[in-house]
Image 1 (cartoon, rainbow, N blue to C red):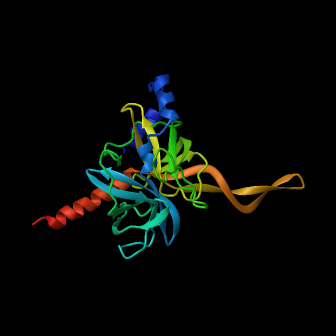
Image 2: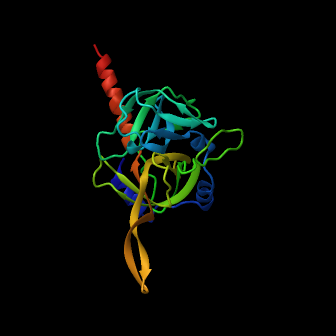
Image 3: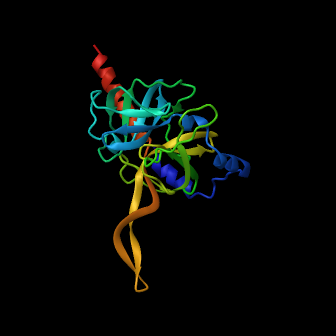
Length: 260
């Protein structure tokens, strides 16, 4: 991802948007993103995940801490489908090159039609700008709430925020900050934006969680900081590029192993 170009575009007055395009881009999200965002349950708890198609192969992407400690098909993993938790077979757990990145890519037996799966591209996400509307999808884990309509089974919650900031000082672990109230259970869900140049919805990152801050209590008319942690309203995620790196790293290893 060309982060220098991204930052320049974010603050350039030369970037113009037509009002109809921006309005349409901010009003809705294609149903395919909802259908292919799945609740996932492991020994670590309940989180979110999403099916993607990259170069003709299907992967399940989630947050690294959701599947921490899972290394093989012998570890139980379930996704919620048709009103029940369904066990899935994990072929391999892939991780980005940097251990700082809270992303995991699962190779499973799950499949999605190429025309319906969430497509991942290799050409970066330089066209997202600071302040642009984004969506983040997932399942609130307390009650596993979800949508159910249009003949589709369980579908993820959709929440909206704005691209607030990013930390790209470490290109191997680019952090995204979204202005939006996140919920427990959304970890591993996709962060989506609308590319106004390509006129398509794209994934920019994977939800890790949210930043905490200490709550304050009024004592004698004075605000006193407590030890109670509350949601600061800042969602934290990592660039989807790191998930792609994990996929391509695995492909290279597989190709090298097959080479005579």
